[in-house]
Length: 272
Image (cartoon, rainbow, N blue to C red):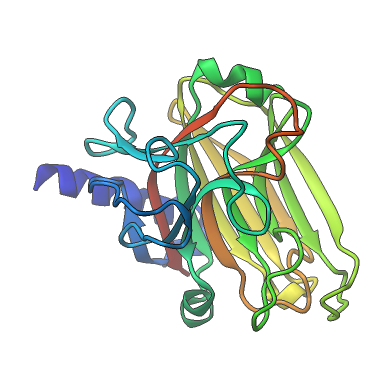
């Protein structure tokens, strides 16, 4: 019972930190205390409660519940993506879960999020590669059966640094509209430390009133990395769905031979 209380306390911290979401209510949460289900190889053939759609190509190492590092509770979610792994869905390479499905995105309109990330120092070889990759989270546009376009908001690692990426279509409602991409450098990736990302994201249907606020917490020090107002969603999209984990556009051509190993913990989302 004490462990559960501590998990809840830590997850609730998110909604006490950002003034814009002080009245937010948690919709879903997990600190990965349950075993990883088998049978997830490929795309969306298994789920991890309360999240949906596990995606990975190797039944042994793509997804594991690990006690080596944990932000809260007794365990965390370990992901590993290796050069040579088979592509998973749409010819891309990933170890991801869908934390908010399309239907859930519309029903809940979540706008507050939290995820903790741990990157071992042994990962520096791939972290320093010049090819970007998503590490942590991405919010993806969609409408109907169309999930075209790149993420409207994502956290990436490129050349040893975290960077925030926003994409929008500048008000154009065509699904083939050109994407505008806005990036912001968050500085060097901290190794062997838990990094808490606290996110407020109101896409506002792609309007100029969209809002992105992101805090990073490392060693107990909270830093406001972003406070952006402006377009932050493709204007043709419904409320974006949320994916967590690691995504590499083409791990076999992006250089390096190191496995992308990342740990995640204390994931939550809510609504202000």
